[in-house]
Amino acid sequence: MKFGILKSKIEQVLFESYVDKTLKKDIFVFEELILKNKNMSKLFYLYDELSSNLGLSESLANELIDKSIIIYENTINKINLWVGHISTQNNYENLDKLFSNNVTNLVEKISAKKTILENLKLSNQNLYESKSGSLKSLIKETNSEINSVLSNLSESEINEVKKIINTDDSTLKNQFDILKEMSIKKLNRIFKEESETEVQKTIQETIQKVESDEYSKMNFVKLRTLNENL
Image (cartoon, rainbow, N blue to C red):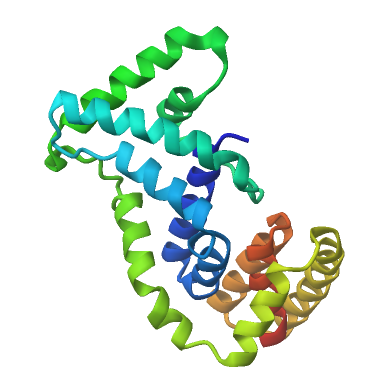
């Protein structure tokens, strides 16, 4: 797994959580898995810097790239490339090509470096903005909001999420499947008892969402919270 793909997937999870207003739990997982991991956060920062428009001179941009390659090579083998079942494009493909140690793709590596170099020379007014806002800006907002979000979690909630993070995936996967079945049964019962059309529609959409969700630690937390509140 290339780091750029991992970073793209994590950003997609946070972006979807922001849109779905489920950021409270996911932001805690983000802090535990990324921000508290010195090597992981170092690479996050490195990829952010090299994909930004910094308005640098060509010599400074070249120096930044060269030093970044050294930092990457000294860091990448110290991390576990965790990733959930999220489908997304690689938003950092050029950086992955730059850091690749595959000697058969030197042309791609040189081409990627040239693209990154030109990007670093641009001013920040040319930053790409998605239709819902810059993912990079969202990550920065997420970082600044972490302390306030965590302060709203009780001590028992914090301990419980930490426990989930440290639990083996195979164990949680079995529990996830059981929770999914229980939640769907509860939702179907509520659906039959509900007379309001709009409410029924919402319940049906929730059932479809639960059925389609694949296992991940984030989805486990969401599903268990849903099941407890039904």
